[in-house]
Amino acid sequence: MSVIDQLTGELSRLPGIGPKTALRLVHYLMKGSKGDTRRLSRTIAQLAERIRPCRVCGNFSEDELCQVCSDPRRDRSTICVVEEAYEVGSIERTGQYRGLFHVLGGRLSPLDGVGPAELNMDGLLERVQRSSGEIGEVILATNASVEGEATAVYLEHEIRPLGPRVTRLARGIPVGGDLEYIDGNTIAQALAGRREMES
Image 1 (cartoon, helix red, strand yellow):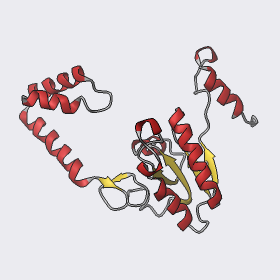
Image 2 (cartoon, rainbow, N blue to C red; image 1 turned 45 degrees about the vertical axis):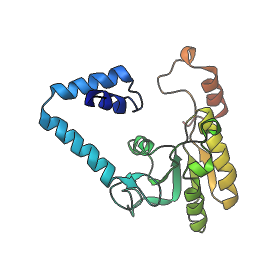
Image 3 (cartoon, rainbow, N blue to C red; image 1 turned 135 degrees about the horizontal axis):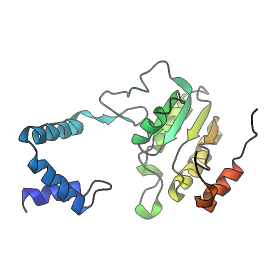
């Protein structure tokens, strides 16, 4: 197998990249300068060597503790649980959340062989137990998929007896959304989660 075929195969394993896109990327790299290709190669190698999960929350970090866990200004009474590490950035960019995070590393999916043991759930439960009541709220920010909902229900069942309040991100109509084009499930969730208007 040629190097082109090998690299195309490796790139096509990435999410959202099919064989055609992978081949286009390989050709783009071949047309570029050797310096650019070598720099990309070195950066990918550094990623594999230097990045690891934070020992507390599971977020990716170059250090033993990620930037959030090592920041003494964070609100340590709240933990936001996400499925994947890249979702931490999505929440951070809002500027509205100052608590801690916990990365599960996926979501429950029994058909794919992903149960609680395959996820970073024990770490979350240990954090809550060890906090001696300091953690007052756990926000379940799993996705609105069937698997995400199942994960949230499972975690709520496990966390609630430990004491903290368990909340879920609100679901509903996006800003600028037109009711005519929004699915019934989203409208139903928006109705269930409605709140009093503030003047």
